[in-house]
Image 1 (cartoon, rainbow, N blue to C red):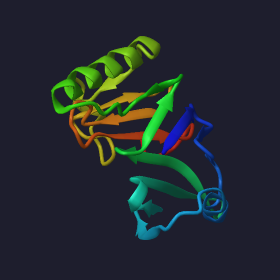
Image 2: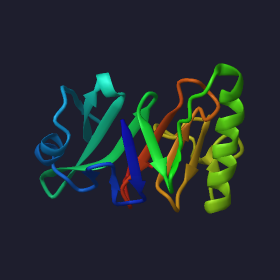
Image 3: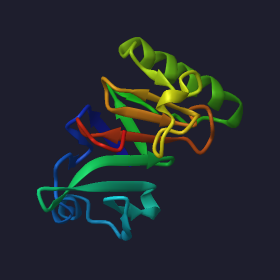
Length: 156
């Protein structure tokens, strides 16, 4: 399934700030809710490899992040961020995407180089594009995940 990314606004039909009920109306697939964890909870759409993250804002749960992994297809500016070709080309394609995003957001944070940003959500193998709200987890790995965040999300 394709998910067009509009930084800080939406991922496919899911808009940041939606309540869980609103998300489930526009995204009517089977899901499981994960229990409250550190002030947030998640709807996991396992079949689609999509996880929606909610934070409580003024006593209302709101969508603040969307996490996608293959075979979900996050698309930014017309380009797939999880291009999957044969295994020999996967690392090359991932590095190409990484370089392309770095050219768009030169103020990225590479946690391999700056351990000050390693936290609960930013692991040592992540690259955060703060101006885009996009986080690449394990960017050259076959099980890569892309996280897209709302502006001001406290997960980062």
